[in-house]
Length: 116
Image 1 (cartoon, rainbow, N blue to C red):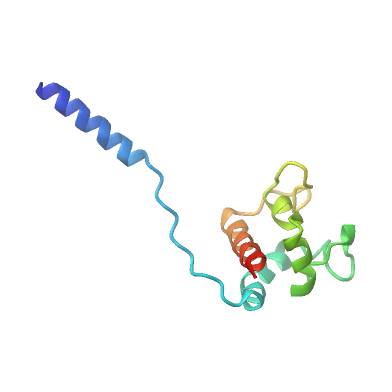
Image 2 (cartoon, rainbow, N blue to C red):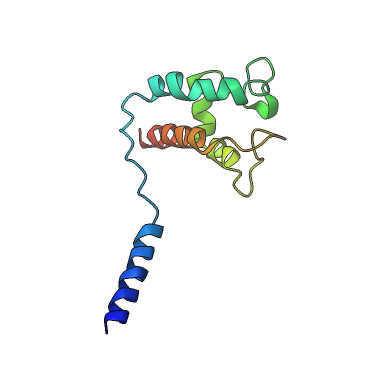
């Protein structure tokens, strides 16, 4: 009987230890344009604007301004591309996927944008 309790306790401990931690709750974005400027624009400047600026506008996509980025945020192209979702051209093109933290930042902005 003691063996069963010990083994049961070990299994329960292992199961609890293997559970993923809940992601830390992110504060709600109240000013989507400010969040875009401060958090999203640096990601775009580093990874996207070489091809998706007003000067080049590859595939007609411009990410220089809040208004231009809103279009691809609202039609689903932005998240589809950066998350490498099926049916979308993975972006950045011919480069590794963006780090999870940057995708999360973009996802938070898009979600806030769609809820407005």
